[in-house]
Length: 100
Image 1 (tube, helix red, strand yellow):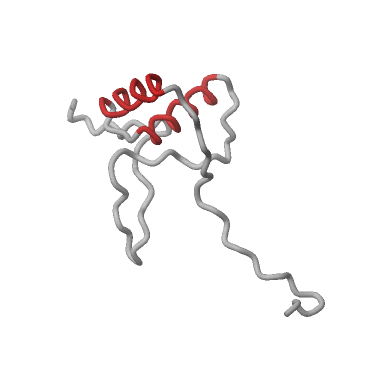
Image 2 (cartoon, helix red, strand yellow):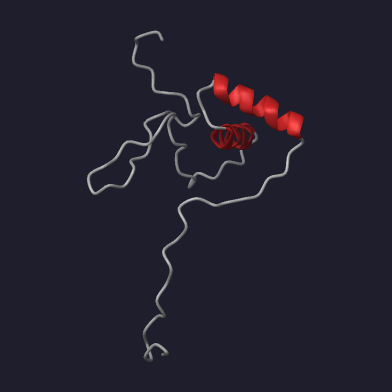
């Protein structure tokens, strides 16, 4: 069935996150996973954090890039969809003055 003249064909919703396959040396991955664990992140989140930091440091992070998710599991918002984290742009939790 083709769309009628003047109507756009139905579109798929945009993908929320781009998926990529990354091949790493096993020892590099193990070191990354240990580092991620120390930072309370998944290995995937640690890779994104490091890439964003490198892009920002070199002035290449697009201004339109969404904020990085905060650490931990996303909270459920009304309607059942996860909320974005509340960390800062570098992935660190916002300072609350508690010192730790």
